[in-house]
Image (cartoon, rainbow, N blue to C red; front, side, top):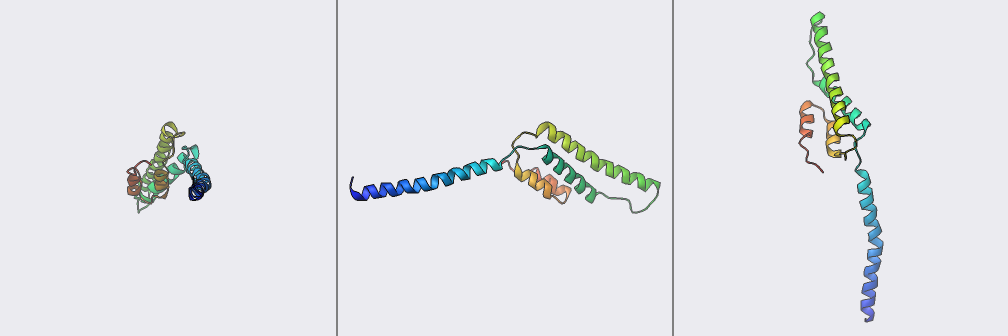
Length: 124
């Protein structure tokens, strides 16, 4: 080999030696960002769904016994939604890879329509 080939080969080896560890670090970091669904994820989303439900619920504008019953029913439906989500999440999602886009979307949803839109996010 001539001197130029050796220099080019050595330069290439230096570039590889410098960037391969950076690439591996990126791959390991990216892989560690993908984590499994936890009980805490289920709890957070469930609580947020109840909050969204309550914010959108149509509460009676007048007082009285029937209005109090209506408020109790509306609140119980929000609690039921929360518990239903958490139960289903525990059974089907805990321990599976977390689709961070969907969880983030659901945690930032302001309306029930936003929550529904989160279900259409493609898997990563």
